[in-house]
Image (cartoon, rainbow, N blue to C red; front, top):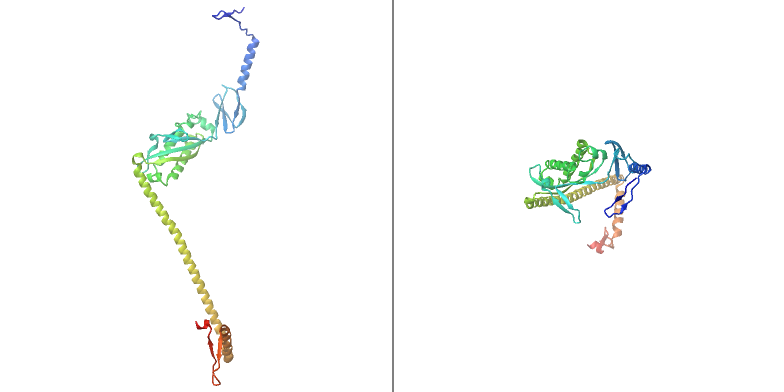
Length: 334
C-alpha cells in the first residue's frame, strides 16, 4: 500500500499512482516530440548543412526539410546573402545617427613604400559564397562568430594585405590619385587568399578606404603640401583646357582658310582657262572675218553698256565723225 506524505502543516498529500500504461504513453509522447524535432525550415536567404555523427550529410536549400533528430544528425543554417564587414584601424561604437567611432592606432599606422608613416582606415565587405567551406575549412569559423566581430581570419587577413599593399606604394600615391589602385589591389589579393590559400568560402564584395591621412603630428604640413599639389594640378588642367580650346579653333580656322584659298585658286584657274578658250574661239572667228567680228563685238559691248546709262547724244554737225555720248546720271558722275 502506498504511504501518504504529510507537509509540516499536517495536511496529507495524495499519493501518485504510475501504471505501466501511463509510463508507455509518456515515453511515446517524448519519442514523438524527439522525432518531430527534426523538422526544420530554411529561409529564402539561407542554406542548411546537415551533419550525421559529425560528417557532412547534405546541403539543403530554402524550404521545409527533415533531418534525423539530435544526436544522430545536427543542423547548421546560415544566411548566404547577408553582407558582413570588418573594420581595420577603427571600430564603430554607435551606428547613430550620428555614428560614433573609436580609433585603433596599432592597426591604422603603417609604413609606405617610401618609408613614411601613414594612418589608414579600411572597411572590407564580404559574404558567404560556400557555406560548407565557411563552416568547416577554417578553425573558428564553424559558428560564424568572427564573421561579425573585429577578430578572426577575415580581420587578420585584411590587415596583413592592407599593410602589404600600402608598403608597395608611395605616400603621395596613397594620399592622392593612387587610392583606387590600392583598393583594387587589396580586393584582388584578399580574394586570392580566401579562394586559393584558406578556401574559407568567402567572397570579397567591396574594399573601401575610409580615411588615408598622415599622422596627426604632421597633418598640418601635409595639408599644405597637398593643397599646393592640388593647385598645381588645377592650373595644369586649366592650361590644358585652354590649349584644347584654342588649338582646335586655330586648326579649324587654318583649314577653313586653306580650303577657301584652294577654292579661289581652282575658280580663278578655271575662269582664266574659260576666258582663254573663249578668246581663242573668238580669235579664230575673227581671223575668218575681221570686219564682221569687230562689228559684232562692238554691238554686243554696246548692248551691255548702253542700257544701264542715261544717255545724251550731242549732234556735232555735218562734219563730225563721232557721236559724243555723255553719261550724266548720278551713277555715272560718281
